[in-house]
Image (tube, rainbow, N blue to C red; front, side, top):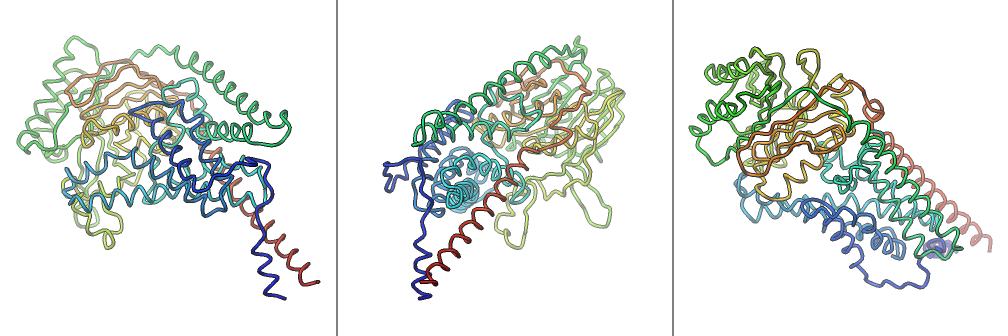
Amino acid sequence: MFISGFKKIREIRVKSSKIGGGISLPHAIWLPALTGVLSLAAFPKLNQGYLDWACFVPLLVFILRCAGARRAFWAGFVAGFIQFFGLIAWIPQVLTRYGNVAEPLCWFLYLLMVGVLACFPGSACAVTRYCMRGLGSWALFLFPAAWVSQEYLRSYAPFGGFPWLLTGYSQTDYLHLVQISDVTGVYGVSFLILTFNSAIVWALLSDTPKSRRMAPLALALLLLGGSALYGERMLRRWGSLKPELTAALLQGNLSFEESERELAWKFRDGYARMAERLEGTKVDLLVLPESPTPLMFQFDTVYAGTLRQLAARYSLGMIFNNVTVSYAGGGERYFNSAYFLSRDGVEVGRYDKVHLVPFGEYVPWKSLFFFVESITKDVGDFQPGSNLTTVRLGDHTANALICFEAIFPYLARQFVRRGSNLIVNLTNDGWYGDSAAPYQHLAMARWRAVENRRYMLRAANSGISAIIEPTGALQMATGLLREDVCVGRFGFVQDQTWYTQHGDVLANVCVIITLVLGAWSAWSLRRAALVECASLLAL
């Protein structure tokens, strides 16, 4: 009796769904694959962001019609694998060319990374399908929260997170929609996109009366329209600023393959030569990019003197990148640092990068990943800084984000909360050549300006250097892989946004909703199973 009872329990199926009735999708793995391809096309370099407003429809249809959470996971995995395989296709080039990694190992590491990243969307799909057992077809509207939850988790784990091209970033060029990020962060736009996709599926496949079938889509359109109207208002407000200060960004286009002697000359004399183009231009702040250098400002008096004289000669503040070494506590500890000089060439502050790039600036868990330590041999094994240092520049405060720190929303927000009135991004995207990576990196950096309503001065060694306005608009931008000087206007902004003050409230709410509904579905299923078991035992 007990055996037959438990067999009966295992035969319990998903609640009857009113979505997709009559549609048979055996082995229709092409549906999540289509989602992966369309989502890939939404990001740089292709920049077809409008595709994201419907690209999740095939994936959702598959989830709703597949046999269970396991298949839903693999559907999300396939979509994510295809997307990430294309989005970070520049990684093998970096590993082989600059990390001296053998090609077979390079492809193994690349595919491993893509596979790990693909597990995140897979988990969102699995949770959504599992919750159908307790919520029925209404679980469709859990999908936006589950998807945002996995993106939020990916921003922090593993190894400090990799929030590369979250769904909302596909809308970077649609500035009217980007503006809501000063309240919701980038996750708000992700949520809006996923809600719209869910509403489309409900409208197309639901067997409910037409008025109920179209209601979610009408609500999604209302949210979209409200976001656009808010964006219009914010564009008028922040686009009307008239900054009075001038910044110059030097893009040296220094190559990793040049000799130390050539690099030393370019650092001592090359940037000074580029600065001569500014003769006759009143410049308030000069920004040099993150770039490879054999010279240390800390010890090389000739190099330090050149930079100090440059600041004093043109009476401008200066921000530049260099390596710092500390002997505190015994032994040598290296930091990737940003230095700040006053108009008279005096060092007024230094920021040591706190969020290092795993396998690029350090090797996590060295005993486990000993075989990839060669990747860091040219850039050193850096230590993370201990403070989010902001620096006074006259009457105002600025902060630096070094390289990939600009893709982490929480980091820029914490700097601005601590009083920063200007965000400066020093980066070196020369590793990636003319691939999509420099365009992707710039697209994400633009959101930090909008979220916190700050000007961002972005100096990149090989491009793309840019002056980004508080609306996310590019006031000035350079090309790739060439020496250039970017000059434009900027200002120090005092106000703090709701997002700056409160952070990722929406993302945290999505996590809570996903956990609560997931737990409730599990409890409902267990309760139904116990009731069924009790009824069978009573026979």
